[in-house]
Image (cartoon, rainbow, N blue to C red; front, side, top):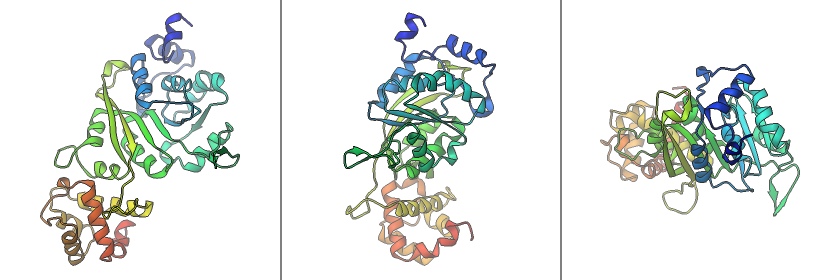
Amino acid sequence: MTSAAQDAASWLANPRATRETLEAFGLATKHRLGQNFLVEDNIIRKIIRLAELTSDDVVLEVGPGLGTLTVAMLDYVRAVCSIEADRELEGVLATTCKEPHQDSFVLCMGDALKATPQLVGDAYASLGVFADVDGKEESGALIGPNKFVSNLPYQVAATLILLFFQEFTTLEQAIVMVQAEVADRIAAKPGTKAYGAYTAKLALYAQVSGRFEVAPGNFMPPPRVNSAVVRLERAPMTDPSGTGVLTSEQLFWVARVIDAAFAQRRKTIRNSMSASGFKKDTLERALLAAHIEPTVRAEALGVKDFVRLAMALAEGGAYGEETAFVHGRR
């Protein structure tokens, strides 16, 4: 390894090392899996700084590729569990990540959309990494990730971010590279073109606290879109009275209300939601109680407006009425 490589955040984050690694394993990039390999070490450094990694961090990563970001993170954290869909990269990651980091790196092969806290907790357990109970690490108590740090496959990036904040309750931060358009949606404000159901639902769980842009030339091969790294911090949503944090079931209900409100985006919220299965009289009362004009469109409302509406609907008995809609049995 050259002196320059030794000084790098990631020895893989350059075109030569990436090309040589791919050639050594007889691989070519696979656009079907959205693979564009990051080859600029300065971007790796910026991700590491934005993530503020420490020796206590338990990291979840999706789409490690060759391990370019992974090898940099492993110098800082307690453990990394990486989920990779491409079976041909299993041998590469065994060489670049597992062999030099036997005690802190674990690879799960498969579809990240199917990952569960149990699967990931078992993966950390295989490293001997468990949750702390009463201030002491207790064998058998599965641990969850506190940070989600990834250069994400762009076709599933938005879905994964929301899903992981919903499913992994231990998750405190996500520092992820996504398509710039997705980053815009994540941070969009009500009334803007980028704002939609996804933005409002994600805001139930987290808020953006950092971002930087990444040009196509930082990848091999260069993608046809611009990218951005965003940092999200978990921000528990409180109920309208401010007396407590919403439960998982309540958050699920608010998300369903948001989906119904945006189901027919160009219609008023009253018409969109009634077309989605809500009874008009129940809806009218709830809109009044939530101080929302029936003639506004969903895109004009913030996440707290949707929380008030969802709670008013639940109090008015709409939760039971909407069960068939929730389960797709209208």
